[in-house]
Length: 451
Image 1: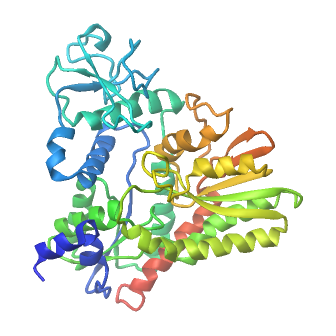
Image 2 (image 1 turned 120 degrees about the vertical axis):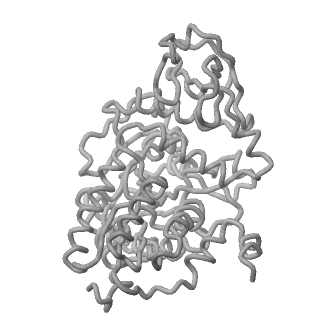
């Protein structure tokens, strides 16, 4: 079959069909190991958010719409005091995607001439408008990407994150360090690198390093996504890796970590530890939340059950051992609202919390099963969509999280029900994620000459 025809047939599933399914997983020669994560920086960097948003729209939009929607007519500006505005208002401060409140000449944007731009998706309550300043020419990125970056710079890092830092880079870095220490002992001759798959520069640098070191096989392991998706893995990171390697070495993609029992045990153990302190007279609703996606076809829907079915079984065992009254639901943080899911085929995390409140559960415990570390999505964006089930939740209040070696716990109360988000498998639970990495790679490398 011609490659272009294959690509046309499978669409965004092409990467899964071409680069993963049926791949030859036998290493040859010297081996390099790439441990990869999203690459979200600890401090705000506009480049990361712009590039990721460009990927979102490039992946999602038909080619004939990209030129219009991804226009750059100037500098997109957000008022951090009213970042989610959908109607025109008089701003008190305006910042751009770099967090700056002044133009190139040092003049405040507030004093300049600017215009209001309506939300691009007018029926989507989560979309927002922005102000456009064109006095200095183009902004250097699509406006729709700039406005998101400006919101993250001015509102997230400017107000909601008091320390102006996010834990992802630190928490993923600890996983890499622990896994690398074990792998270096076990596979002494192998090269080992950390890669940020959303950065082409990071991918290119790690590949060139390995080629220069004489690697004939490069084994790629994404450790931040328990379930691989087309959006991030099969149609984004993996094709980019193959393109940069360009036949100079054999590329092997290790499987998703959710297929490893120890990865599932990380979340199960978190629940076990919570249950130890809960009276058996309590009624519990356990919420196993997923990220969610808006696509009609996604390979993660096919591969998700390989992780989620045994994870659910493990959770049920833990709940039965606890011995009180309980129920369990799966939910989507994103794309399960009326705008994205008007046929109501999905169940949102907001609805899960609402169910707990309406049915008067004593406790609703949420575990974010698609995340191994905290990021701006979990801490802010997803929180705004699900925690509004509790009247005491205020999306404009800062999120305090200082000790990144313990999971972030957030607690809210409504009526009889306490909602408790118990965070990601960091600190004492990191060892399970590390074990999953080691087991996954050992399944590929066992018996190889580098062992």
